[in-house]
Image 1 (cartoon, rainbow, N blue to C red):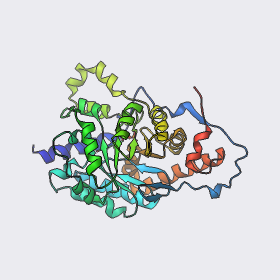
Image 2 (image 1 turned 60 degrees about the vertical axis):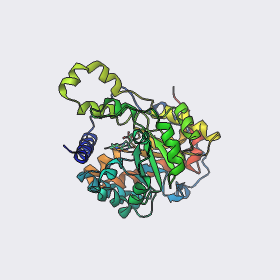
Image 3 (image 1 turned 90 degrees about the vertical axis):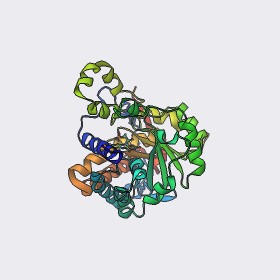
Image 4 (image 1 turned 135 degrees about the horizontal axis):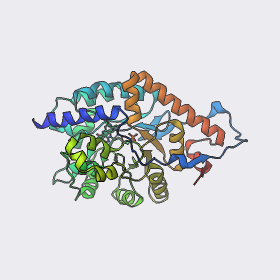
Length: 349
Ligand SMILES: Cc1cc2nc3c(=O)[nH]c(=O)nc-3n(C[C@H](O)[C@H](O)[C@H](O)COP(=O)(O)O)c2cc1C
């Protein structure tokens, strides 16, 4: 099998597995159920005045939401990205593309990335590259990736757990931070660093902010388990043989609520945007992420499932429902802006 079809095949398998529900964390939640909002019987606000407009990457969003980086680089990706992007444009939310590594190999699937900018001309679009691809002497050609989608930012994904368990993975992370420092210096657009479902700790966040990144997306544990995805891709024999330890790693990671609480205090020291994601499945959890200190919330698999079940129309309805629920919570807590939600949470233990 040649290189391009190996990458494209892997992406196809990821989409298939993530459309179902078998890849969720089984022994850990994102942690939002531990918090509830303090009801304010005197909000001194009119519901129709409540706006969730948010600035992100120099553009205006209609709500603080990002459709997380997912796909591109295989045949199926074009239709999915077309629908995700159409919904992003209609709802005025940001969108990321999946790893663009394949686009550097050849131009066969460039259309699966370019469709995102075509269908979402006005919203922020985020490119994507793996941390492990920054470790060589020469950085990948980021200009090509940015031009392909007229990107407003480029996200580096850190996925050491996935690389460790992926049959064809590359768990070589020495030099990733240096690569990020160089990328920040050379990239024509701001650099975002994200996890993919195991979370960013405060310590990792601080080192990345020292490197000069513009935003952190914690992508914590409790939603899609990328260890789970790779374990399901392993052969049946290996799965049986390694049953106990694989179950442990399936649930590895820092729950999203804890990631956000750990990273938010860094905003007092560094200017950056905190994106709260990982296991956010509805507007109430999105509002809780904002209340814990995220500036923007994001989700991946729930939105993939929506377009798989009902195309861009169902995704638009889903996002509008999230927006309505965030606004309802703002009204009931007396929060004039999404940021003001921060003073309205109690921890139920
Ligand atoms: C089908 C699929 C493909 C993904 N591919 C990428 C990718 O290429 N690059 C990346 O940074 N994250 C990728 N992710 C991870 C998501 O961006 C997100 O961080 C993670 O799934 C946790 O969010 P969730 O719990 O809302 O799914 C992918 C997620 C899904 C569901």
